[in-house]
Amino acid sequence: MLSVPADRSKVRGHQRVPSDTKEFHEVTKRDALRQLEKELDNLLQTAPEEKKAFLQNEMKRFTQLFERFLQEDGPIEWDKIEKLPLEAVEDYSKLSAPKNDQIREMLDKLVVIKLNGGLGTSMGCHGPKSVIPVRSDLTFLDLTVQQIEHLNKTYDANVPLILMNSFNTDEDTEKIIRKYKGFRVQIYTFNQSCFPRISRESFLPVARDFDVENDMEAWYPPGHGDFYESFQNSGLLKKFLDEGREYCFLSNIDNLGATVDLNILNKLVGHERPVKPIEFVMEVTDKTRADVKGGTLIQYENKLRLLEIAQVPKEHVDDFKSVKTFKFFNTNNIWAKLDAIDRVLKDKALSMEIIINNKTLENGLRVVQLETAVGAAMKFFDGSLGINVPRSRFLPVKKTSDLLLVMSNLYSLKSGSLVMSPERMFETTPLVKLGENHFAKVKEFLGRFANIPDLIELDHLTVSGDVTFGRGVSLRGTVIIIANHGDRIDIPAGAILENKIVSGNMRILDH
Image (tube, rainbow, N blue to C red; front, side, top):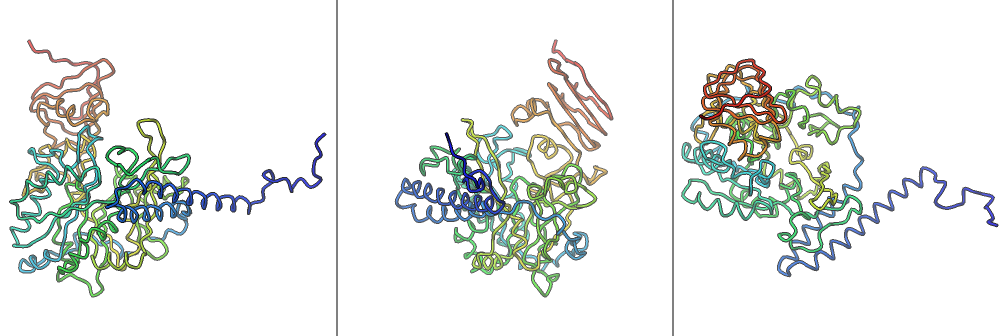
């Protein structure tokens, strides 16, 4: 017969007081960190000898990221969010244009950086997203090079273009940029880090060796917040500081509205320059219902900072999405002072909030990617500023619905920049939703349009199901076209649809 201890509280592993729980988590975290370090050491043994020192440094950075992930407190304290001070966000319309004789000198203090780490797979394309044709057979990269060359030629300046690639895009990009040799643009590239994906169950790397190309799914580029350290490690930060450059303008390569703006540059280095330098500018624009998940600007602990939806307590997500409460959202167009980046890195002050990106690999394995956002560094800089820019500076192409807009007559192309047609009565672009099953991939999307419809007077377009468009179609007001499962709708050539709902089945047969 088993004897039962008189004092049941002494039975280990059953009754726990709250402090035990905390201690348990601390021990678990320490153990997870030790196990990870051990696994990373094993991985490093498989690396080529000539790369070991570099990779050791990379894995040290990943370990620091992982350690911060273990220590993070979770969402922000909602009640600590303060009202944005009036001077925190400046209206773009209040900025003044520089005098022509200053522009060359201002441009020579600038470097342009494009985030070029993404692939076009979500739109059914192979290789870097930046080489998808978006307008007149010109790619994102072609348009960017044209914009910078136009600046350099017009003002006899020398603005360099820097591409931050990932291990996914580096090789293809290096081949492609050779075609720009004759252009008046100096192009530099550097790679962001390559970090191991970790198992969601064990928190250990899923990679078995450092042969990244052989097992691409086991590795990932850790978000654009990695820009700062990778830029420094590439030697380019020092190079541009030595040249007397002062600011970088950084944006996503798929944002076709993110061109060099001389009025903003004038605020930073021209005659509008304040006595105390502005070290960090985030371009924000007015939030609409389409942007409710986008990051916003807040004042928190007396600092201007970026708030992403992932940092919001669950019970306040609706507050975060409110257009009334948070009027602006982040375009990810960033202007940063180069010597301030250098200082913050040397002070080891950068510890941005971690974005936990859960993924499932093709073999069903559930993994975690630890990422950071470039705008989250804002709180580490002195004299940060938001500038409320027109919507035209935010023109990202994430889906084929965005592609439809930029390929249409809503825009004309001028020196690599897309300019909204003066015939459009509203500054905002139409809201377009194209069905995932028939329009998600670029090739299929293009096959459904004999040519891109006239969208000048369009407010809202929803298309779902098996729908095709003939030549010379004009869409106006609100147009909804829904082909039910098994049905097909062919919009005839020359059709004008204004405030119409089309559903059912409409076939046009050749005879």
